[in-house]
Amino acid sequence: MIRDVFIGLGAWSWIILGVILIGVELVAPSSFFLWLGLAAIVTGLIDAALGLSWQTAALLFAALCIAAAILGRAVARFRSQTDPQAEMLNRRGQSLVGRVFTLETPIKDGEGRIRVDDSSWRVTGADRFAGARVRVVRVEGSTLVVDDP
Image 1 (cartoon, rainbow, N blue to C red):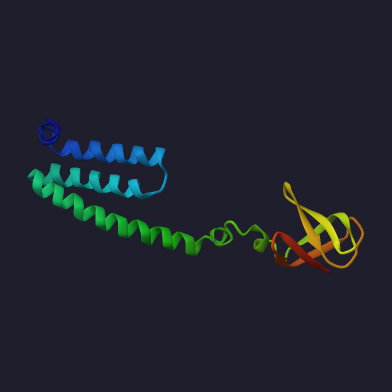
Image 2: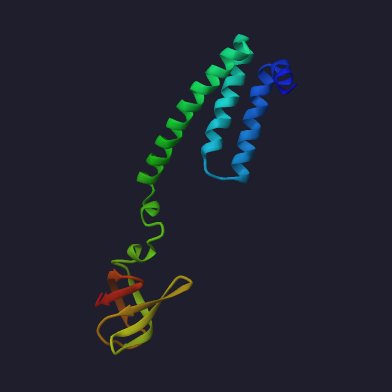
């Protein structure tokens, strides 16, 4: 029964399948269903233009899915290489190395705190007064090591 409806709709069935797959991408974001949905829509457009049999359209869809998955991986890899923030994802402390901040609390006995945007970070270094400028030189766990700017 479903096969009869699918065959009866012709090219529209592929386009509808593509829209459904792109809709699934909105619910379960992974960018995988997006590429499958685009492959289904392209299959539907080619089927509408050439009047393919359902077997040929299914084979075309399978080939386009493979090509779309490869293209999707290449796009994701390129994006991660060109996005400087993607490299520091989940390593926020590393992105602070080299930056200069003002001490929120004084460094006493080697420990103090700085404010970075909306968060407070524990710092270690030579004793300094609150309000002193310090440069982050490295990260040890979740603690920033600071020195003179």
